[in-house]
Image 1 (tube, rainbow, N blue to C red):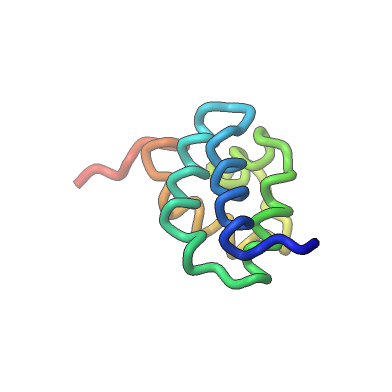
Image 2 (cartoon, rainbow, N blue to C red):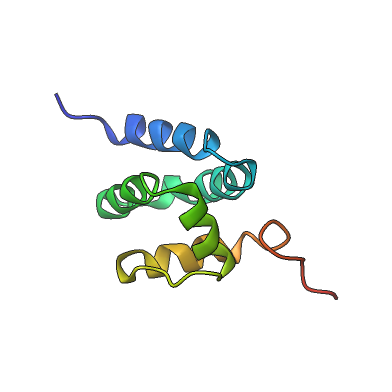
Length: 93
């Protein structure tokens, strides 16, 4: 039995909220809330694969401390754009 797209989105949102480190809970749950509804099947599959990665690696990718694997580069850039203040201080205005 295949999963419906609605179920996939709900499952990925839950996986985004229940991470190994609190910072990734905050970063990924915000990203999921803002972007899952607009993702197509290929993007959902990529995000699903991304969620299987180690949280410390993900945090380093989002924060710019580690090189991002090419397959995730665009998605990590989108996630990092919304992570200001969580991975590094927010820019002064």
